[in-house]
Image (cartoon, rainbow, N blue to C red):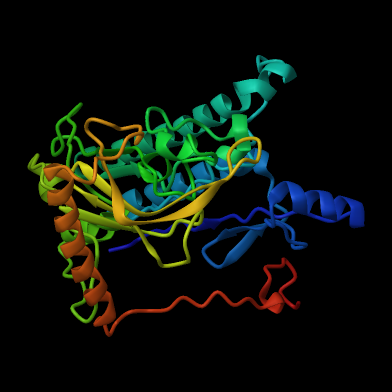
Length: 360
């Protein structure tokens, strides 16, 4: 049962002040531009417009704690979904008396301060959830993609997942790509008494698994008139099993190929690329799109930086390529015969732009 909900939606926009400034903003933000003032929306109500980025984290925290408090008072279960703007640009960490100098903040302090702010937000929510019902509350923390490299010092780090095969040819290998730095994300799941502290799992999971797992824990059977790509991960979380997805299929992520193209296939420790291409890196360099038939295949256990693909003529490559080809054909047939398949409508209506004046 959902007894409280949080929906805080943000969109990066700008406000024009003449044609010169308009052109500047359009070039800087790469099309992320609108004449509509940035709104803060909770459920279906605009609660602030334009949004004050310096106060956004406090808005997140107060709304989240209110949901937890109300559920505790009523003695009811709750589902709280907090989709934070962190660590996406623009970063607006709080200023304090002991804040670093402007020069230091421009170099690396802004990102670190924003990360600390996110950590404080998660900590406040965890503390409130623990106080409400510690032994009966699951907290699931994860991200949606890797760093946005073209934002340079405001992007973050891919760690060891550098996608060297691609970066050696030019461009970035993080957000908008299917290199590990683009879509491998941190995940922490917390449930005292049910999930052992400091335990880890090598199971291959996806963000698509959150939905069926939450349904399973709530004792809800998903609708049978549609197909779900996610799996129930409760045995991995609660029983310490290590068997996740045998295969994961990654469609186009924006840097190469067309929308919906099957770009990459993960098969256990292996990863096969049918399409490669780089996102824009810090400094503006990009890489050209390339199609691969047969695919490039990397062993991520031996080569987490994805620098050297397996040789085509080796038994190891031939075995993996055969398995990938079979599963790829099964997936394409599944999509082609899925009568519940939906098509997204990306059309826009300027008259529906969010505005504080409800009469407009």
